[in-house]
Image (cartoon, rainbow, N blue to C red):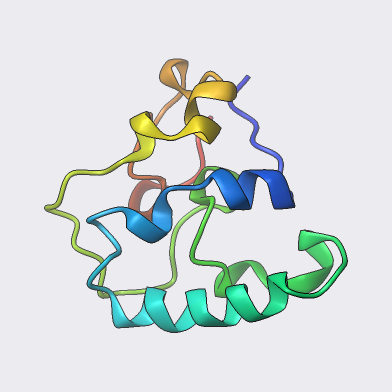
Amino acid sequence: MGRVELNRDNVNKCLCKVCPVQTDSKCSKDKLDIVNEKLKREGYIKDMFKLDELPLVYCSVGKATCTDLADRELCKCTQCNVWLENNLADTEPIEYFCIDGIPK
């Protein structure tokens, strides 16, 4: 419980790209463009990205490196299937992984 695997399935389920905390972030948008391009190729997620360039699945990789996140916006973590399937309600933090880090 609380450990989220970094894999293509979780990347595809992730709500970070539509989360109000990130939607106005130029940094996140630029990184997401790179992610979308790389996801078109075959291979494993871990082999495709440096963790600091991945603007998704912060419950798997930890804090965002982007500094333009809207930390006063409502987070979507608790609405995400990745959050639900990995029982993250019983972890610390329980959301805002992009700001507060990986769940423990």
